Structure formats: structure tokens, C-alpha cells
Length: 369
Image 1 (cartoon, rainbow, N blue to C red):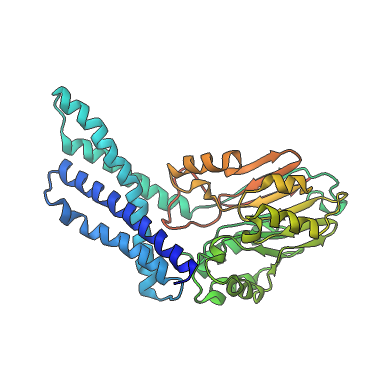
Image 2: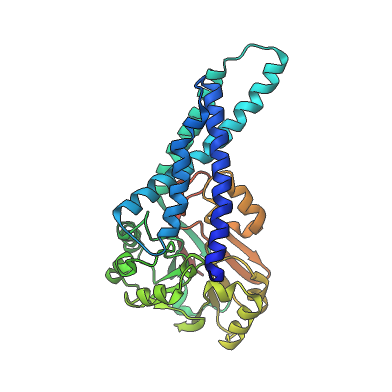
């Protein structure tokens, strides 16, 4: 077993244990508060969905068929519901125990009905909200901006996660929105794919139907490197989208640098690449890098604007709070570090549960001044 397979096996074991424990807790709480004995029986169906989710992720690296897609969609949706059901179950005990100890009357059934009802509503809203693709418009002032770029716009599209859940139809929706926006260039900063290595040409085929005056550019994200990334890069290249292989291109005096996720995640390698491309300090520069990390390196090397994704802004409450703790103010939106502007997008797609609560699916339209 190679290192990558061993890492996947360890990760899958840990996640499975956590999810089955959470599932058992929710099932036991449901059984107790609704007066339905046999919680071990109650957890069998949702528990099996937890196992299906892990299995479909692993199998999805090599296979793709309707059964696998349906299993992934159903199990991923259940995990979104399980997230809110867990907090509903915790709230049941937090509210009930002190009232029970005080000897006050309280209907366990009514309490659970209210809290699990809220969880159900949050889940339903999450499905609708995730499917609602917004356009976020921002304006960025770049020093030494060439005259041709004043007032021009670029679109940042990240984290589409094309695979078992989101396919060519989803990508066509994104491209239709891009047609309406008419950006001068499109930047794809990673996680175009969800990790599967099957039917890659079919997944990205809609890119063949769209072009931008200054081009469409792509760098990998972490999901695009779960397997040999050359598989993904070749599929993207065949659509006409320009893959930036740790290199710089110039567009009417605007410098665009694309660094793949593995290299951008290593501060020494990132610095080496930025020095090798020989940035011109008299012209603005944009760095496409999937994760909003090693920002001090980009700032020290003279990058004007970094465009990233990866965080999904947490995607589902309360994980947006955790993501904010990890990435600070760079978890989402337009922020500044010294002379460096950073925009981190919450992404157009989702990973795992097709839900968003507390975040939004977005295409970012950036206007330069």
C-alpha cells in the first residue's frame, strides 16, 4: 500500500468512526425523546448511509455510474441533515436535563418536535440556498494599472467540484451566467474537479462552448490533485482553457501568475516560482492560488492581488465559524495584507452535502480601477 492509499485509509477510518458515533447519538436521542424504543434499529438506515458516503468517495476515484452517483447524492444529503440533527439532539439534552432535575413538567416529544423541526427546516433551506448561484461584484484598485484594463472585469470561478453530484449540466449553468456577465477574462482557481478520474472530458466539455476576450485560465486545487493531476490538466487543456503551470502570462500589461496547489502550499517553492517568473514591479500582478495561505510570501514578492477559493466560507453552519478561526479574515471576501489584496471566494459548488447555510454559492465579478 503506497503512502497516498494509506493516508486515504486512515482518513476514511477516522471520519467513519466520527460519523457513526454522531449518527448513534442522534438515533438514541430521537428514540428517547419521541418514545420510540430500539435506537439500535433506528440507526441502521442512516448509519448505512454514512458507510455509503465513505464508500462512494473511495470508489469514485476509479468508477462512475448511475448507482454510484445516486448513492453519493443520497448519502451526502443525509450528512447535511445529520449536521443539523446532531445540534438539535444536543439542544434536546441541554434543555431537558436541567428542567427534569428541577422537577418541572416538560413534554419530551414536544421539545424534540420543535428542535428537530428547526433542523429539518435548516436542511431544506440549505438545499435551496446552495442551488442559488449569485454574482458577487467587487472593485479592486491596482497600482500602475495599464490604461486598457481600467474599467475591465474578470470573473473568478472556483470550487465547482465537478463529479458525481455536479456534472456538465451544473457547469453549463455557470457558463450561461458568465455569458451574461461578459467578463474580459475568467480565472478558475482550483477544485474544478471533485476527485474522480472518470469521464473527465465529459465533465468539462461545456468549457468548449465559451470563450473570453483575454482568455480562460486554470490552476489546480487540492481535489484536483487527489490523483495524478496530469489527468485533470490534460482534460482541461483539451477544452481550450489555458492551464497555468506555475508560470506567468501577460495580458495587455497585466501580469497573471498561476501556481498549482501543491507548489503554492510550500512557501519556499512558491517564493522560488514567483522569483523565477520575474515580476515587473511597474505592472500589476495577479496570482491564482487555490488556498489563501502563504500570503506573506506573495506580498513580499510584490504580488498585487491573489485570487483564491478552497474555504467554501465554511459552507454549512457552524463550520463557517471553524473556517474563520483557521483562515482569519482571509476566510472569505476582499481583504488586504500590506500591499497585497486577497479575494477568497466561497465557491460556485459544494463538497459533500449539497447544502449551504450561512454562506452562498458565487461567481465573483471583479472590476479593476
